[in-house]
Length: 204
Image (cartoon, rainbow, N blue to C red; front, side):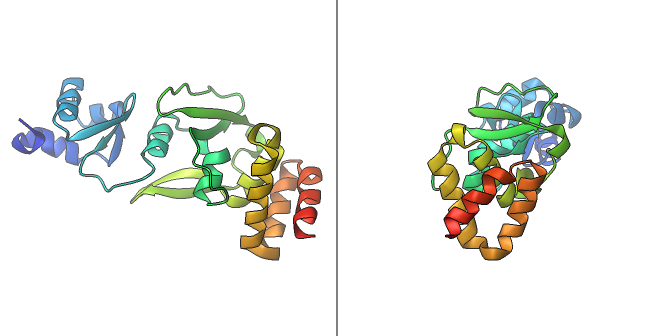
């Protein structure tokens, strides 16, 4: 019997958002047995441990991001994942890159593959915007300027070529108007000495 043949399950599933957690399912009075049944019947897909998505939800290419952000509530999409979403690099990241405030618990997520960075709590909220990973499902992500500055700050880990490529693409897209925001972010993150000469070299 699928959910359509069980009005109780169908209504409770309909009360949930497109992507939901085990805790949210419990609040909607869906038991673990109900969830297992819905997965078996193909009414629900399990994206990650304890994170599910309704089969009738709008299609999305960002299910991995939704799954990770559902499990790590303080997390912000950063690094290569943010650069890719801003189309500042052509690489498709092999893992979801997220940041959490330094001093908070680092989430441990084996699937989808996840890379966790810890950023200073004082500047953690700098440059956060919302990205609509699926219709009506926004997730937090660093904006283009913050993502580029972070790439330059962590270029030894990300790679000098990738960081400079992202910077060059950002400058070509935003022009002179984008330099001010880039320098503001760099100043707040004590990275002006890294970013300013790189900007001058790219624009030379």
